[in-house]
Structures are given as C-alpha cells and as structure tokens.
Length: 413
Figure 1 (spheres, rainbow, N blue to C red):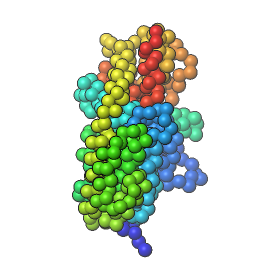
Figure 2: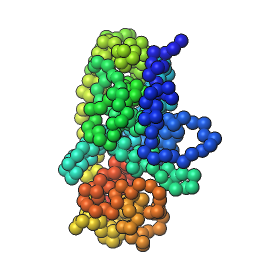
Figure 3: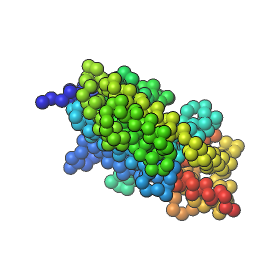
Figure 4: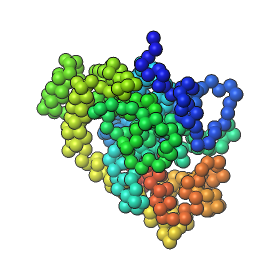
C-alpha cells in the first residue's frame, strides 16, 4: 500500500530533484559508487571533524567527566532515530532525513546554548550580526569543514542543497498548527539571516525539525533526574502532565513513542505534519516544564558564568594580536611559550584558511600545508571584521573539553 507522503518524497521522481541534489562544487567521482547523493552526504558528515567533536559538546548539562550525561553527539543520534522512523512510516526519503539529522547541530558552540549566547553577544558587538548555531552550521559545512579527496587533498564538503537546507532551517516553533515545506529550492541559503524564519524546502527537512523537539525533551528530564535537579514537587508536576495524556511511565521511550505515533497518524500532505490537540498540549506542557524546572534551575548558574568567562577570555586573548589592520604573527609566535596549545592550534587554523601569500614561511612544523585545495575564507586578513570572524569560527568549533584546556593555559605563565 502506498504510504501517505510517497509522492512528496525527495527522490528522482520529485520535480525538484535536480535542485535538491545540487552541490556548491562537484565531488570527485567513483565509477563503482553505490550510494545515493544523500547517503554520500551522510558519510561525509560522519567522517568530518565537526561531527567527531560533538561527543564533547554540551547538550544541556556541562559534565565532561560523566559518561552517562547526554552530549550533543547522542542528541543528534536520537534525532536521526526519530526522523528516520517518521520518514520511513510516511514514505519519505529516509537517507535524506538521516543526513540532515546527523548534521543539524554541527554549528553548536562549546557549552551548549549558553555558549551560543556568549558568542552571539560578541558577534553583535564586533560584527553587527547574530551568531546562531543553525547559520554557523551552514558556514562550517560550506566553508570550513574539510575531507581529503582521493589524492589526499583537503577539500570542502560540498553537501547537497537539500541537506544544507535541513541544517540551516531546523529550528523554530513546531507545536502549534502544522509544518509544511516552503518548496522553494532556488533560495540562496546564505541569505537566511535569522533562525526559525524560513521553513525547510522539503518534507524531510520538516520531519527533522519536529524530530529535534521530540528527541530532546524526555532525555533532558532523565539527565536532570540523575543529576539531582528534580525534587518531589517537580516529579509530581511532571506526573500530572503525563497523566493528562495517558497512564504511562515518564521516560524518553514513552514520550518519543507517543509523539511519533500521533504525528504519523495525524499528518497528511493536505494537513501538513501535525500532532493531535492532545499531543500539542502534552508537548507544550513538557517543554514549559523543562524550561521552568530544568533549563532555568539555579544549579546551572555557576556553569553559565564559567562558560561566559572561558569564551570571553579566549576571544580577548586572540584579539590582542590584531592591530593596525594586520595580525601580528611574530608577537603571537613569541607568546607561544605561555600558551603553546592555543597558539599552535590557532596558527594552524589561519594557515589552512588564509591566502598562502600571508602565511609566514617560518611557521612551526606540523602545521597543515597552506597549499591545501580548499576555500580560503579569511583571504589576506585584510580587516578586523575578517579576523573577528576567524576567531569566532575557531572558538565555536571547540569542544567544551578543549575550550577548558586552552583557557587553563592562560592561567599559567
């Protein structure tokens, strides 16, 4: 039997197929490749450094020594699981949903959403524009993340339009009304300047958007319980929210299963992706509970202040070496003895993404070759704005663990 959305899937029969699989530049070809364009995107994301770093990036709770607390990597795995289940049941392209879900949070800063707020404040002050993780995710996959080609040359990822669209358009409210794609595959994605303002171009992108909300609510409750954030009053309030829907236990499995089944039953191409009124109330109740009882908990205060200190100090230290319209390579090199890890990694970053003509010939050994065949988004570092962007990119790509490590270097001299 044909599934509800089979005729809407992003597959070769879709009238927009050519636009959906369009890439910023062509990838190297293999005659014996058996993967679809979206399956190829999935493996390119899976092999990227940005994806690997998600295992040490905060989801909600900063606890780098606790192996059982949800990290950003576990979160994207949950989203992929939910999205693929929904896409398969509705008859949509599962490979596209999986690739989008895996890559949707590549742009997150260290220290979770609070780290994002700190970098946003810096970006507004120095660049006059927002820092938002969806836009930063698109920036990373378009300009910064690299993979070696068959000749061992680092090159940009060059993901398909559909996957890039799913990354930059995955946020926004979903509880009320219904979700449906905008359908426009000609929109330049780099022109999107605000989160949540533009719907995804595909039904699969809409599935990932709502899967992101379904996946995190129950998992955050489990972490809050294990870390002691939940008192008896909180537990009783939560039980009351769940009892209004059914008598099941309150855990990730129950919340995810209930919402997936409801979404698949209620949705159609005519109505869009939608939940029943009861599930909308349930989802909104859980969301408000989490914000009131977990995300605003006083126990998160020290973490938030620490994250702000670490990121601001790292930014301030790196900004000391730009003045008079240029980066002082020599001064930075001279200070390398005080913070060798920070200096080495930042110089490696600039060597890879600046025009080779501005790279000093006597840089320390071990830096990646400035002759790598990738885009050089910082050019000749001709302005403070370009340099600030380089610093923000560098810091936003860090894991929590690495940000703490290089910050601690600033305390020793």
